[in-house]
Length: 299
Picture 1 (cartoon, rainbow, N blue to C red):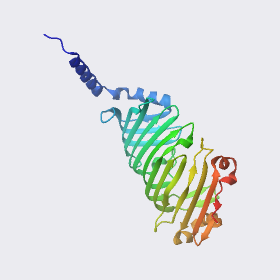
Picture 2 (cartoon, rainbow, N blue to C red):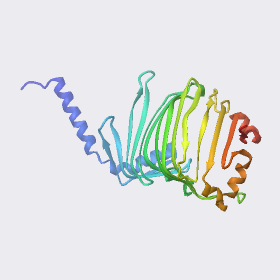
Picture 3 (tube, rainbow, N blue to C red):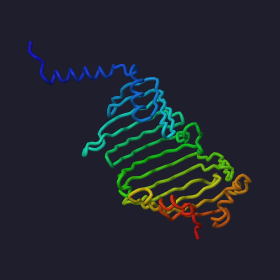
Picture 4 (cartoon, one colour):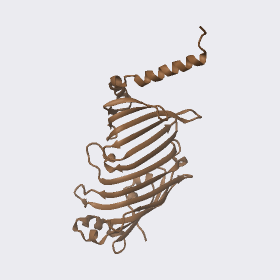
């Protein structure tokens, strides 16, 4: 009987390892896995089942998963989560971490990928029909209701924010701001926004708002944001130059519940129920001087 070739041995070993992984009782070790994650990251995870995924890069599948990022207050529940580790950059070799959350309890699906080196960080994200409850913190309810679609692709340098490049694309439907009461001094009634369309491009150290429009003819208010941010080496060193235009609908302006908002906007009136305000200051100035953070009237 002839000896098997090296190629045959390698194939047999590969098949053995493949089926070993396929049949490995990950469910019996999920408690230890989640405990290790919690000790190293502070993120609490629980799920009904855990297994492997072989579509694309190998990954781990979690069924009916609950994630509690306690340090940030973010809590997420989904029917399925898939986490993968791959190669993000060839040189220097940098790992890439990707995740998919399907059937979020708050609504929609979310995909993200993060590639991080010593200073270089790449962030990609795609969200479809995301419920705004996803962005609630802790046990507090989200101040905004509606559905969001988001696409983000950013490459950042931790040592030089001005080297950031990429884009952010956002659309929203059925958007509504819940009634707010700020320390009993300022009350905002439930406000219907409806739609948002926004696009921000980041290139050559400048984040330019290509388009940011909100509201429709049936909204309580509508308007647009224009301008740019000149990125500095750090966030405080960045310079903000923005303009916000707002128009209140006749019915919303006549509603006595909007009196606090109309009182605040009064100093920025252009004509009728149209208002405009602007900012032209560095982030450091806004942080160190409250008056620098107060918007100025557009002349």
